[in-house]
Image (tube, rainbow, N blue to C red; front, side, top):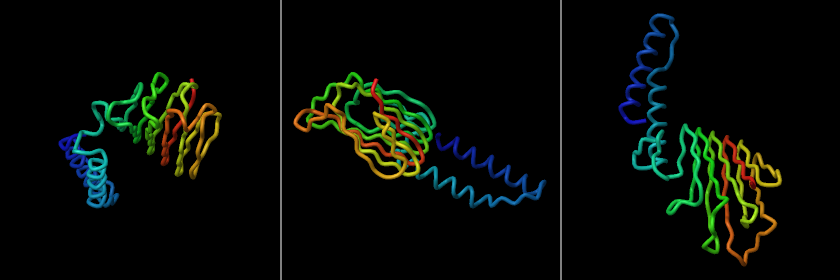
Length: 177
């Protein structure tokens, strides 16, 4: 959503608000609503950085907004995946753990995330949910609060994967396949 599209939508909403007020005598606080939309737009731009057109979120950034995207393996630089009003699928079945601790972060805000793991991958999952849900393997589910899960083959003396999952009004499913 570029600035041109955003301004176009604001002008259309302003026009519709005036028409509703004049013809149907429905009063909508137009300027308060427009001010709120502008603040939301600026906030999203700040969160997702550098004024990138956020609906497309091109590249391998890990940010998915208003769409669905699948990632395979671990990315080179960023090990963070965010789903906002969308869905992200992270397939980690073929990964090789080269470091003692490999950490990734998964966030779902009004959206969904799915993480697919191999049973051979030792994993520790730290899940936080606020009015959302995080389902970890073996159907352990948390809807509010914090929980921790460790796979049966987890050993702190060997290389392992740490997944930090945060769900706010959304859902995260972490499963084996």
